[in-house]
Image (cartoon, rainbow, N blue to C red; front, side, top):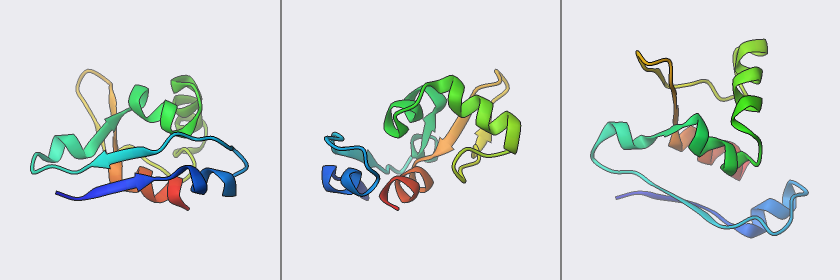
Length: 88
């Protein structure tokens, strides 16, 4: 099982001190490698609507594009890409 950890020290580089450590765990189930927009927003410290608006306006949000768009119109984001963006 792979773990991607986002440390508080990394948050200081972005000018956002005291960020909680976030652990993203990969599992054998490929669906669990994905985050919903509501799960992604607190990791990036924005509201879910900010992510949706960025995607609508420019086709991505901070370089992230949804991995899957479900039939119910929900977006799923790749956890490894999210960790890469957060960790710089």
